[in-house]
Length: 376
Length: 80
View (cartoon, rainbow over the protein chains, first blue to last red):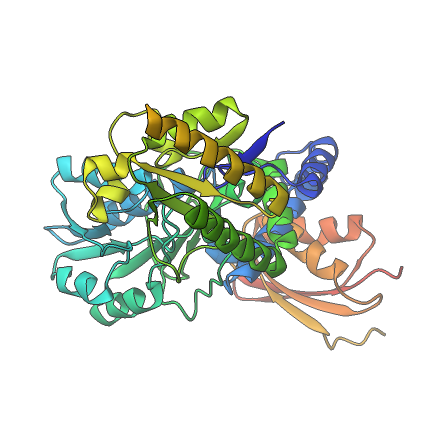
């Protein structure tokens, strides 16, 4: 099957998750919104998952809203806060390196007359809490900064940003799709009003996510209909998907993070020692355990990734969402790179099953390919 | 006569059906055999639906007390 190193795009479903999904699919035939016994049985699977996910971020069960994934959760927060805001002039603050589901939603809101500030980042991709604070105005209704970046793995200081927002009475949202279960999240300590979570980055099923909404915070729903999820998210429950999400969170283990960190650092060292001109995009520390974004001088990242693909090794070219586009990554450009430097970059992302032996094979192949490409 | 001192409490005011039944059943499953759970639920559909749901699973509703637009339900967990 080759070697899969694009786990920041999505991960393989854990067998224990797949079993849980199948078990629930076969046993829970009722609609989880129906009040008969079959409905209650389905709802039990939903509520068990809700308890697990709430517990994992120190939230209350009723603060968790199930969605179809990170994109829906992010859209819900931005559009839902803005539409309920009483401010006449509305302003939101995001960073320049947010996921497209935040940036494109913000652009759509801009077209509708909402003012948006795009806070810049430093060369490692860090957002400064003081820059966010300076961007706040009397009209600011929401700040949205990701917990960790999906391309470089940079872990943002959300606790400090959240504190600045709380002091100014501004709602704060953190997109934690990449960081969830890899670094601790505590909604009570980290001063957040909303958190986006999803299942498929953590060996759960695709098409399932969640949004943490702090108790008492008002937000308009994105989807209207049957008024599920305390009216915040209408639509028939994806019972087996949600049960699988709960299982994925339940089996996530900090030992996996430790192992990935060791492999990440070993791999980076091996490449740097064996290939001339390898540079890490993003910080050495305060970076996710599974993401390595590299620039290799005088080597086109797309060609390198394509050659690796021919050898059955899958890596990311920029972000997964922009790999079909010819434009360089907006994240790498925001770090201060020019287009050529950004195009010399690839993203390698590990999972809990990645083995040192596999990474050794990748290093060997990369040495060969880089040598060939530099001769052309 | 049953002791009406609850071992655990669960406030499900504002929680709609069937989530209230599901959460009550999950809570009961995590308790010891014979332990007592006090659940607060809303008047209307919840008080019509939650007690039969827990009895369907073999638990016993010991007491139902109305306080305004809420109900306090005492449930004894089934013996395993």
